[in-house]
Image (cartoon, one colour):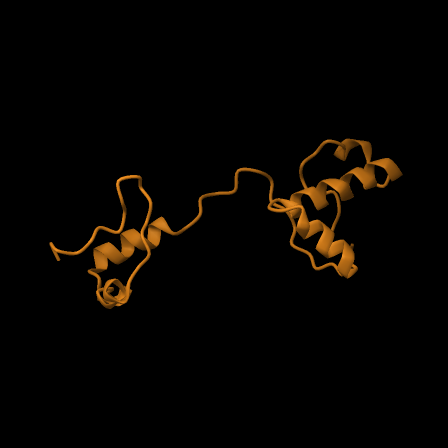
Length: 109
């Protein structure tokens, strides 16, 4: 093991793995129980910091879906904000909900 190349260089960049590297990998089940528990705890997300949003399914025209995705990461949040803005303009959202970051609608959209 001492003659293996390090996976991370001086700049903190991870090098490309070789077949020799992957041959040394161990299955998760072969790790000691204490280590398995510790690693399983690391992969869980913490509590959500902002109000939860409601997952829905919506059918869009292909050009609309493509245009939203083309705006890059965060496109769903931008679509949410555009829909909220439209709801406020049309008066569908009651004044008490204006500015609220929680979902403005139910699953019935």
